[in-house]
Image 1 (spheres, rainbow, N blue to C red):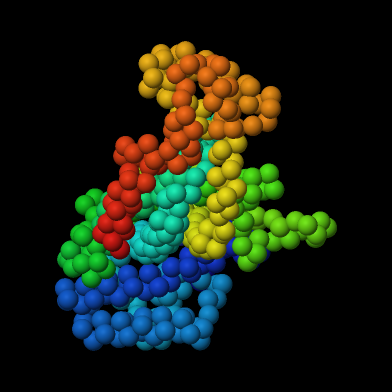
Image 2 (cartoon, protein in one colour):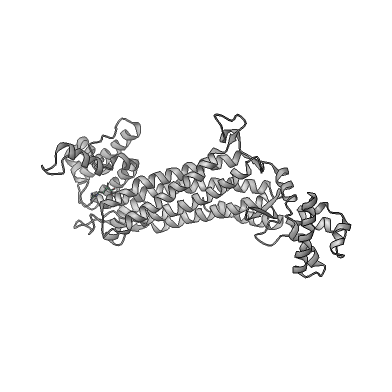
Amino acid sequence: MKLWGGRFTKEENQLVHNFNESLSFDRKFYRQDIEGSIAHVTMLGKQGIVSKKDQEAIVNGLKGILADLESGKLEFTNEHEDIHSFVEANLIQRIGEAGKRLHTGRSRNDQVALDMKLYCWDELGEMDGLVKALLENLLAIMEENLDTYMPGFTHLQKAQPITLAHHIGAYFEMFSRDRSRLHDIRERMDTCPLGAGALAGTTYPLDRDYSAALLGFAGPTRNSIDSVADRDYVIELLSAMSILMMHLSRFSEEIILWNSNEYQFVEIDDAYSTGSSIMPQKKNPDIAELVRGKTGRVYGALVALLTTMKGLPLAYNKDMQEDKELTFDAIDTVKGCLVLFTGMIATMTFHKDVMESSAKNGFTNATDVADYLVGHGVPFRDAHGIVGQLVLRCLERGIALDDLSLEEFRAMSPVFDEDIYESISMRNCVERRNIIGAPGQKAMKQVIETYKKQLLGNN
Ligand code: ARG
């Protein structure tokens, strides 16, 4: 199809075509493009804008194209500019004259706005399912590890004892918020741009409510200019995905640390690890590293689209074609990361004993020794100083606070008694923290119940 005048040489024309075309990537939403066209022509038929006979021929033609594309019988050919031209040309080839009526009352501008929306909608649904599966796995790990003690960290220094369930619960919260962000986006993007035309609606008596309903939207968009110029929901999606990746990346970083020789808190299953080509002893956490690494790619897509959109006058501009490759790539990346990450943590071994002894050897119960003193009338500031000195003593001898003799405790403060050992035991340190949000089993069980309801509630 020749769109440009004679001042272009053939070679230049090809370069322009290559630069301008989008079929090489917008073929990804051929299903949504056909689905949208079927809804559009069904509405045209109902309104008497095309005859019932033409409507039927077009719908059947479109279904044929869809079936042939799915089976591989029909292949994409590069001479077409985009998926919209490809489908239309193919339809005309199949059914002749009637096919030329499909595009009545429609522009590629509202068509592409619709296709992208439908595609993102479908992908959002899939992504939501993957996040849900991750949450279910996290919940299972939590339920099994309510009394798996480990050090909690601040500044990557051992701080206070927590449980593995509590730590994993922090990620459960993060991914729950990610999920609710995905749900929010769907609510705001639930309007159908079909009928906006190029930018100013059309003169045909389209029933926009009807085509919107056919496609499952809550209703039509309310401003035709905005309908073809809006990519906010894509930016929201990229933003939600960036935050999700940030969470996956933080978790990956911890798993990489935990899986290291120094920590040995976990062991990533062989199926999710790779070896080194030179060092036979190595088992590398490549999957976690790749998830962490791919985060940058998703952020990149967000910044790229924000930048593309920021200077665009209303309404449609071809710049907006740039939304696709990066969004498709970001979506595929996030979905891939979710699947692999979930598989990795579901098969990972937690070395509970190592975690627990790490918590013991890191003075994570120092605050509890201070609390003990406070409980016996010592002002907190003094207690802090006393425990600091006890820690110093332990460090000199390479022992834990629990290993000090009662005499040694008493040398620092006479209020110490035999019950100090019980009060600063790992179990006690954790189990005494039973306010909502804390690691104690009672509190955790309560929270887990709300998580369960939450997961059952939104499927
Ligand atoms: N490939 C174009 C895009 O992705 C489709 C819309 C083309 N519209 C136009 N007026 N040239 O944005």
